[in-house]
Amino acid sequence: MALTEEKQEFSKRLRDSLKRAQIQARGAAAVAREFNLRYDGTPITAQAARKWLTGTALPSQDKMRALSLWLDVSAHWLRFGEEAGAGRGTTVLRQNAAAYRVDSGWLAKKYDALNEPHKRMVVELLLALLRLEGKKG
Image: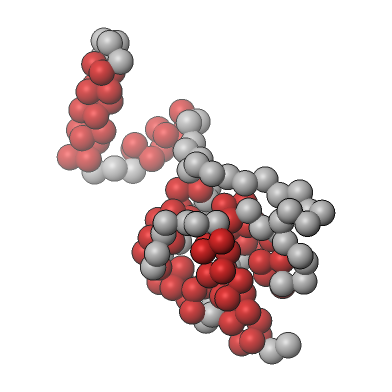
């Protein structure tokens, strides 16, 4: 099978999996946003998601694994279409909710990367959340 055809087949399996999993994300920007909430690596752009959805590009293996967890299908099936998919003898873990990192080192690096106005916003948000929980900031 030619690479162009493989990309098109992957795209069809991806779109079908999004529908089957009843993912509310419609369109490349929404798919990218939802994917990035669940992926621990470098975020993808809407353009990258559009390329996946239109069959002009394939995701890297780590992104393929993240997609398969999110969509409750096997990564091998999603990429190659050679397996029956999840629920047919293949155990796949589904990630329903976005996985947010709570590692303080990671959080500190992200905070340090913000500009000053955004840092103030984060501090104000944290103080507001603490007040809501009845804790002093």
